[in-house]
Amino acid sequence: MTSRWIWLSSQIIHRIWFRASLFSLLAIATALVAIFVRPYIPSNWTTSIGADAVDNVLSIIASSMLTVTTFSLSTMVSAYSAATSSVTPRATRLIMQDSTTQNVLATFVGSFLFSLVGIIALSTGAYGESGRVVLFVVTIAVIVLIIVTLLRWIDHLSSLGRVTETTARVEVVTIEAMRSRRKRPFLGCRPLNDASFDVPATARPIFPSAIGYVQHLDTGGLSAIATAGGGQIFVRTIPGQLTGTNEPVAWSVGLRDHDLDQDAIRSCFSIGETRSFDQDPRFGACVLAEIASRALSPAVNDPGTAIDVITRAIRVLSVWAEPVDPLEAEILYPNVHVPPIDLAGLFDDLFVPIARDGAGIIEVGLQLQKALRVLSLYDDDRFRQNARRHSVEALGRAELQLAFAGDKERIRRASEAVGRT
Image (tube, rainbow, N blue to C red; front, side, top):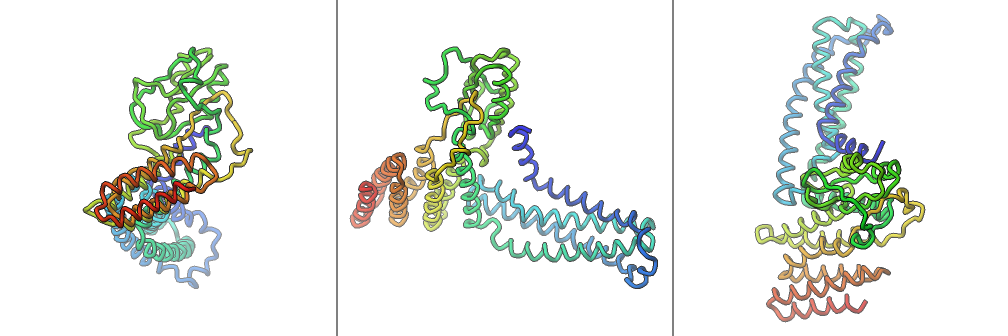
């Protein structure tokens, strides 16, 4: 299975309807299994267990689970709205993919269907006396599951959709994408450092069939096409970049049947209306910066959240300075060439919006300079250069916005500390 199909499968698995459907099918199968197990249940168990009570218990579960599911759905929608208005609409997708929320709703819906199927089967007499015993035991297990799920749900509601919790989720997925890209900066392919220089003049362009953002790049599929065609593929557009139908996403060189391979190459580029966190760490950086910008707006006026984002930005960028295992960085697809992620672009995504919107707030400006100083201490010239560049730019913006001379002097001293590293 190529990485594209794995990625598409993961997109489906993270949908809320998938887990709910899976739990529902399992619940229906569990309710019907008693029909097939009843021949193996001793007849004297029916009187000792008192399985007749299962009718009332199932009725209670059916009515209560319908109410609880409706309440949970309304709570979930409220959390989405809160995240959209107080954090950023780009982070709502992460809340929708929250596994705890999906498991809770799936359990409630599954329990409702279990009880409903059980009541129907009891009404038709399909279970018999022995089957009632099995259904009674399974119903007790379902009740225990419901209680545990309710307790988890109550605890989870305290943080669902909150600014800090949502920001932490964005940080986690961004670090995951950063670490994955750090281990394989060219997605397992050969580096394409300068497209205008490395791409041969005989290369033939591959144009996409849709306008949008590249959400996923199947480099394994591209390698299979290049190997079968006896040529090479040079990728121009990596995940996160906007592409149109009038500019190539890749070039092919030496493919025996270029015309037939064009559609296959296009299918390796998953293009959508919005960006995705998976192979695009710069999108996570943009979302973090957007959270800080919204917090710094006059309507919200929450510099504490911006300071929190600056701290998280240090952790995100520090991933790029982690050592890389040579075996993990091995070139798996030598006939495919992919451009790298621009570290300067990551710095811009994270710090330009914060420096712009927080230029008139002294505490934000100082925290930004401290963060840039921390990043400038890494043993990497690119970190030092980008940290100093953003320090100077942030100082310039602050001097234009700050009115008090003492605040300007504090920012200058902090910026000078970055320049001395």
